Amino acid sequence: MSTLTLLQKLRIKRSATKEKIIRFYDEATDDYEFWSKDFNMHFGYYIPFKTNLFKRDSMLNEMNSQVFNRLNVPKRSSLVADLGCGIGGTMRYGLRKYPLLKFIGVTLSKFQVSQGNKRLQNMNGLILEENYNHTSFKNNSVDGAYAIESFCHSGHSIESLQEAYRILKPNTRLVIADAFIKKDEEKLCAGSNYCYEQLCRGWSLEGLGSIQTIESALEQIGFKNIKVEDVSFRVAPSVLHVPFAITGFILKKLFRKESLKSQSWKNLKGSLFALLSGLHMNDFGYYLITAEK
Image 1 (tube, rainbow, N blue to C red):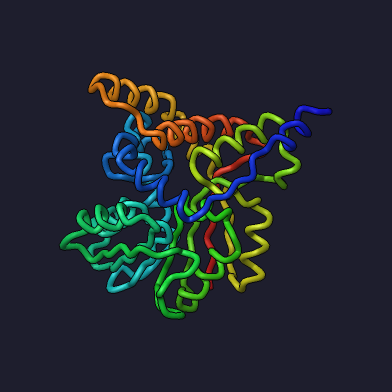
Image 2: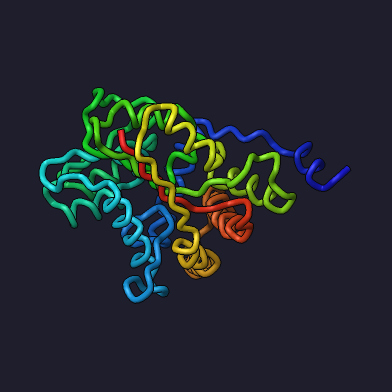
């Protein structure tokens, strides 16, 4: 029996249930302040001579900038939806840079809704406790939508893409920034397969969609002018911060004589396997996807 076959037989079925995702973010959100003072719950985008390799938030905020550049919404009175907004780090960035925009974000976590809305006081932003697969937004109601490392919690499902299409006005855009697999799961090598399983379990992910499947699904739903950009090398410098961030986080806890919550350990484990997965460049990649309704 090959190693890969053995791994597949031992594989624990992933199930990123609503409860698991809520628990993940309720318990781990505080940990993200160590990753990003701006509460950017994602990786970054490196541009030589513009972003600072040694300052994570410089790269993380540049990812926000890249997403907004691709959204290309009118900067006055447009309504933008953040589908899986976390504690609102990207929303705050957008509101500081484009104060005439309006933002609405959704998350399953009551904790993130409470803390995020406190941080958005006196700004044109609001976070709702909703599922991005089934929002309360009206048809054709938003001028742009984005999902930064959030659709992976539902396995980049077609329901997520269909809901984004439903709420967007005609001729407006959806931007997705996320990691994807480059082939079907069963074709992953043994090392990639193991890292992938540990990544999904640590971060409560249903899975990563294959980039070919996602592009095809967007077309079938009705999106046009679809642009898929492999930005793995731009993202890699921020991913390389993971082992240093993990070490610093653990040392901080030990110095303060604080215990690590079980979800913190899972979050750290997921972060480590995100780094290890990224080393399998034939199997995984990080992409920016822009699609127009």
